[in-house]
Length: 181
Image (cartoon, rainbow, N blue to C red; front, side, top):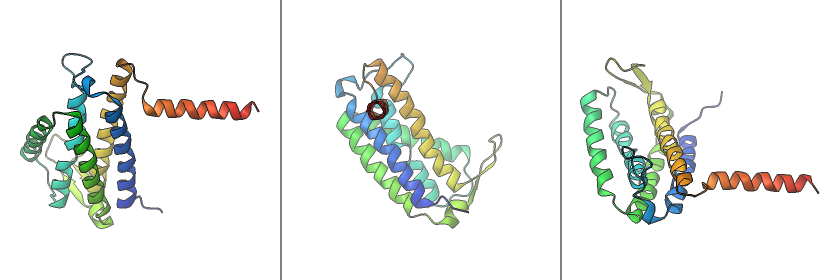
């Protein structure tokens, strides 16, 4: 059996973060205040949220916390919200995405198989009541991909064709051109 380990997780996260940074870079600074509806995060707010969202994971797993309760999670959310609000400009957000992405990737690479398999428990009514550190750390990538998908919709609303869509279209065009020769 092949084990998907820390270096795989770090490499995968780097790819996800690189795509997020491309989106952040392609949206013009003057559009960072765009929000598709009044009660939805703006471009800047979404990107700031993504930039800081891995910090609590580093804190919890560095300290090898074995039980995560609501008070601890709430305190982490409050700290993250404060850090998000401090990121005001496109340049600051891009720097945070790069720096914190590098920090999280390096953290992931330093984990052992033993650490990744350790269990963390949660209070009721959380289900499941136990997860491995690996599953929790994998969720950081899933969380970012969720918000990045939202940002790709924002791009469309702003008249920007997302880079992954452009890349796929170029590959399809090249394949079609190659098959007609």
